[in-house]
Image 1 (cartoon, protein in one colour):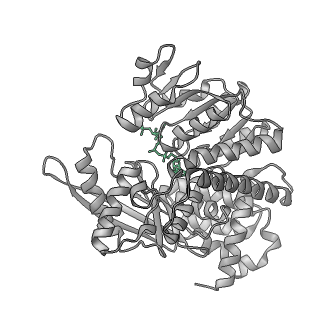
Image 2 (cartoon, rainbow, N blue to C red):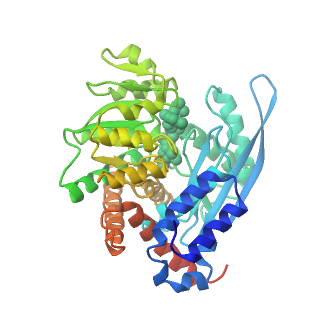
Image 3 (cartoon, rainbow, N blue to C red):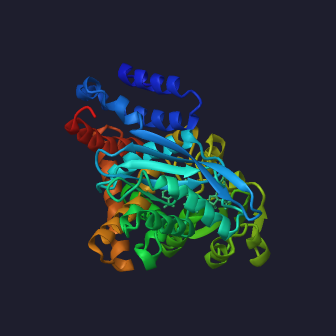
Length: 449
Ligand code: NDP
C-alpha cells in the first residue's frame, strides 16, 4: 500500500484511465512503491506534476501494417511505437514482434526503459514499440515484406535525433536489416544512427549481440562480489529462454566458471546436468530457428520436459530468467528458495512477478532487477550510436570493456541509492530511485512541456 497520498492519486488515475493495462499498472506500481520512500522530501514533484507526467507517454502511435504472404493473401497486423520520455535524450528502446504484443505490454516496457536508460548514465530517453506479428514459421520473404511495411509507417516517427529503435523479442539482426534497408530507401539518407543492433557490415557494433547477456553476468558478478564476497565460479546456473539474451548470458556465466544446467523456449525446457553445450543450442535456435527439444535428441544425458515453468524446479545456485515478463511467479520462487538459490539476475524485462520479488527479498536471496541488470543491451546500443556519429568502430575488446565498466557503475549507482533510501542492498528501490532522480531533475529544468 502506497503511503503518499500524491502517489496514491497518480496510481488511481492510471488505473482509471486504462483499466485493462495490467502489465503497465504492475510496472508503475513497483516504481511508485520505491518513490514512496523519497517523495516527501521533494514537494516540487507534486507542485510541478512531475510524476503525473512521468507515467504518461509523450505519445503512443498505433498503425496498420498490411503485407502479402507467400500465398498472395493480404495480412494485416497492428504496429505500435510508444514514445515515452525524451527529457534526457532521444527516445530509445526495442521493437518486439510477438502475438502477445499490445499497448499495455509496450507501455510497461517503455516506462521501464526510461529508468533503465537513465541508469546507464548515457543521454537516451525511453520508448518501446512492436507488433502482434509472429515471425515464427514465416518465410524470410514474408518477414522481409512485413518489416518493410512496418518501417514504411514507422519511418515518419523515428530518426537519429528523435527516436532510435533496436531489437527485442522476435526482432534480431535479420529484422533490423530489413527495416534499415527500407528506412534508407524511403528517406534516401544513410542515417546509421536511426536503428541499433545493425549488422557489422552496415554500422553495427561489435559485442552488441552479446551485450545484454554479458552485461547481466557482469552486473550479477559485481553484486555477488560486493554483497556476498562470492562469484560465478563453481556455481550451477539455470537460464530461462534460448534467445539473444539467454544464449549470451549462458556463454558469459560459463566463461566466469559456472555450469549452466538448464535452458528453455516457450514450449519446454532442457536439463543437462553435465553442462549445456551452447554450440548445439546456438545451432538449433540461431541457425536452424528450431525448437529447444531437439537438444535432447542430440546430446546424451540431457532431458526435455514440455513445460517451460518447470525449469524453476531444477535446483541451482543462480537463476537468470531471460525469456519474458512474469515467467517466474511466487510458487516458482518458493521452490527456488527451498532448493537453495543464492542469487537471481533478471535478463528479461520484469520476468519475476511482484510475489516472486518479495519472496526472494524476504529470504535474503540477492536480487538484481531487470532495469539495472539488463541495461547492458541499451548501453551498448548507445555505444553503437556513438560509433555511427564518429564514423569509427571500436574493437570487440574495447566495447566489451566499456560494457563491463557500465554494468559495474550501474550496480554501484543502484546500491548507493538503496543505502541512501535506508534499505541497503534493495536494488529494486535503488535502481528505481537512482534512475528517476536524474529524469525528474531534467523534467523540472525543462518546465511544463
Ligand atoms: P528472443 O526473441 O531472442 O528470445 C526470447 C526467448 O524467450 C526465446 O527462447 C523464446 O522462446 C522464449 N520465450 C518467449 N516467451 C516465452 C514464454 N512465455 N515462456 C518461456 N519462454 C519464452 O528475445 P530476447 O532474448 O531479445 O529478449 C528476451 C527478454 O529480454 C525480453 O523480456 C526482452 O524484453 C529482454 N531484453 C532484451 C534485450 C535485447 O538486447 N535483446 C535488452 C534488454 C532486455 P521461443 O523460441 O519459443 O519463442
